[in-house]
Image (cartoon, rainbow, N blue to C red):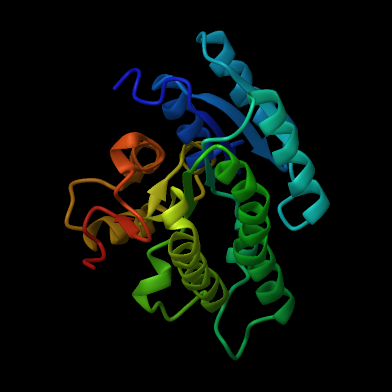
Length: 256
């Protein structure tokens, strides 16, 4: 699959760390030219620098997906430098808000508003910025990072779950509205994924990791590379007849 994405002009939004960074690496390895976007510009630059050192074409841009002007400027700059766009992976999230997302009675509405602003409204802004470029190229693919939380009915984190359910609906709208014009839109919904940052920072108590593993029908927990591989497929020609789907990648923790 070394050349599966050869020549593809792709943007990854929320690409400075974790799943986004792993996706950039996978896309570049398959031959894509990649714009690396993140609110943390130094992190995005570090990812792009690693890719360039490996002989790939990548560059970094700053973006804040709750700011429409920032989104429009970053996508326009990416498209200008790449000569157009063939696809996007929208992966951004404010992970700090998750830890304050309790239940419907105790929830601080500021946490709810921030979660919706990033995970849903921000993804709409990215969609609005990316779509015209895909349409002018004759079609393309959008992949959103959703979550198993959108379907699992957890007793905690209602803001996060609601935002991901809404994102799934947004994705289906895009697929329905522009599918006939060559646009595919899909969500990849990770289960519990141990990112390199989580592992290095010791953020996950061993007992919690053991519990998550016990709830899967797999021999291990998820890795960022697991999600990156599915995102790459959905952005490639192999995914051209997949449209409007939530693809669960969770080791069998949720059977859907």
